[in-house]
Length: 305
Image (cartoon, rainbow, N blue to C red; front, side):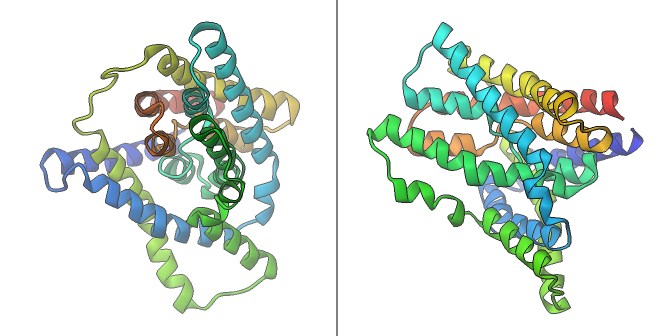
């Protein structure tokens, strides 16, 4: 348990460093976007490549992936049911709500949590791959249909292969399967770049928090519904699937439940802005779930460890 507390302390201190940078105007608020883009395009791919090239490729087809898929589907379906009963919205807005309630921040927050709390960075890999390869095309398709009335099938199918996280993970898996030992001239720069991933992501998040006004002009019914489902329901579903149904125990069970408790991904806001639908819902759910995830994760850690 002491290791978990230390892990949370590390994450919070680095986030606080980002807040201080923004508050003192050393880095302006828009700087968070550039730090995030650097982490997304360079540091995260390097980290995932090195992790997967030295790890067990079967993690991508493990029970953790099944838990992640099941908990996402159940959470999204629950949001649709609640929406139809209490606050019907058009397809595109409903899609944003579904995504906000089931699409986790597996990179910006998931990788630090996997590294410092779970103690195994590869714990985030199945969730990252599932979301980018399966869920992202599904979300894109629903938004295309809801906003434009038709589907760009080729564009949707090529979404995963355009993502540097997917490409780097698959390349790492191929290196591991082939048993290739890369020279130091390749691995040393990648290790340095990968080492920058977590601090870049956490500081960018801290910068983005400064000056934000939560629930300004919020559409409360979908925001609160998605927040409760993502924060409370999704981890419970993950536990029920992983424990009683699949028989996971110990660290393996803790890892999948912790990954399910991650906050809503900032990608959801990117989708909302791109398609011009559900922007306030995406923004507010991401903020509320991020604030709530710390006590939720600490409670999960206290229960399992």
